[in-house]
Amino acid sequence: MNQKKPTPKYTAEFRERGVRLYREQRPDYTSDNAAYRAIASKLGCSHDTLRAWCIQASRDAGECSGLSSAERARIKELEREVKELRTANEILKKASAYFAQAELDRPFRK
Image 1 (cartoon, rainbow, N blue to C red):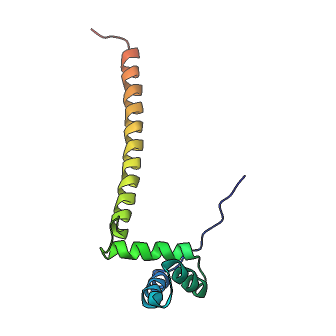
Image 2: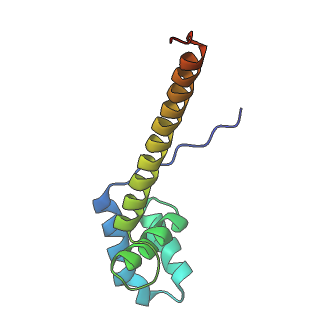
Image 3: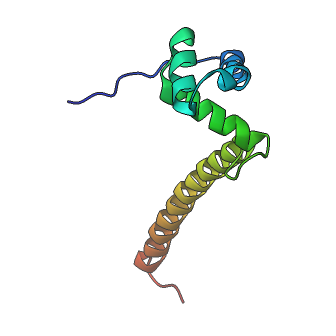
């Protein structure tokens, strides 16, 4: 069975530090990619991870389009709630069908 490699969890402070370092040191590099690679190697994370943090920080600050972290969290919460409600609705439908069938099977009284 193919298992996914666990991804390391970084603290919010560590992510903020990485974004801050990138923003402060970006002018010292010839390209964004060069800056991501150099700074990420100093932090001990991948350059793609640092890039994602920087993009998300820009979205959170309203500097570029896309969902902010708060909007993402809200959507995730709503999706979880919808899943729970669908499950509850399915249970109610099955219970309703069960009791309706039981009502039909009951002898008729005059």
